[in-house]
Every structure is written in C-alpha cells, then in structure tokens.
Length: 255
Image 1: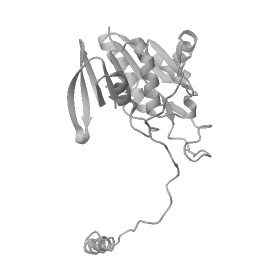
Image 2: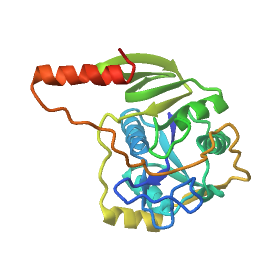
Image 3: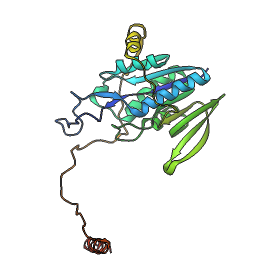
C-alpha cells in the first residue's frame, strides 16, 4: 500500500487588491483573502488519482493560517484519508526553508513512499519548497510534473519542458515530486459535503517548536512598479519605422 503525503499551503488570492504593509517589506495580510496554492491543489488531485488507481493512503499537511481548517476539510471531503495542520508562528511570515524543515520533521512519522507538492507558489521568494524537502529528507526530486504512474517501488513521471516537450523519467521510491498539473483538473466537492466533513473529520495537529528561516533570501523593500514614460509608439510605414528603430539603437549605443 502506497503512502502518499502532500504538502499544501494557502497563498494570497491575486484577484484581491494587494497592499504593502507599513513595514514596506511584506504584503498587508490583515484583510487579504487566502486560497489554496493553485499548484498545491493540482498536487492534491494527483495524489487522489494515484490512490484511486493503485490504492494506498493520502495525507495532506498544511501550515497554520487563517482559513486553513476549511481548506483541509475540503481536501478531506475530496477523499484524503488524513489531514494535518502544522502549528507555529507561520503567520509572522516564513520562507520556504523554514516550511521545508518543519514539513520534513513532521512527515518522517508517516514514512511516506511518495511526497507531492506544488512546483511553486505565487508568494515564493526563494524558489519551490519541493527541492528543499527532498534535500532535508535525502530523497530524489523531479519538478514540473504533469503525470505520474506507479509500478511497485518505482514510478514514471512526465516532466514538462519549454516548447511542449515531455520527458518521461523513472525514479525509485521514496521520492518527492513538484506537480505542475494533475492528470485531471482539481475535482469539485459540494459545500454540503464539506460541512458534513467538518462534523466527522479530525484535523491532526503538530506543534512546530522552532521555525528555522536560515538560508532564505531577505526582502529589503517591496513597492509597486514606478510609473515612468519610457515607451515610444512608432508610426509610419515599414521603412520609416525601421529607420527610427536604427536611430533608437544608435542613441542607446547598441549599434
């Protein structure tokens, strides 16, 4: 029986109006709506597909944040066997190194055969969390995955490259995969089923004693793009436009 663990987190909804906090180095999260990271959602779906196809159990672990309970109950309603919340000072802001360390410490209890996570998130400053988890656990990692099949103690992963190229890679378990897209779109679950799950399912909790953020980048300043007038619209026929382009290149010292 395959033991699959997924790491998922909440991120700012980019549909919302983003504002910078008073400290000038982070977003103002007080009124910001959080939703499950899109790629993590695909990782959950891929895990459920593998469970339905080959059997096994799916555990989803997420760091503490406002609204994470609802996210985990929704995932349980979709078919996850176990959901867990990492408790700690995550809302103060942590980087992927801290998240990966906390997850790696927790997940060893489950002795996973396969770990899935989204290939990236819209609030990342220092790259995807997947490679860091793999490093801390001493497992192989493959990212940008759009399809997975399993056979015994090995799996075959379809990795996407630019230009529409697909590579099929074989890796021995246990392993970590960064999911770009599940084989199917994330499934819909009715609100009534989520509410029922809130009454019957249990969210396990794990207290993270310390969040070690070492190794990550530090934000010195966050600001909206500065407004300036640097665009020039070129009018005229092809010869006139070409002549003006050459003049611009000469003025910039490029030719």
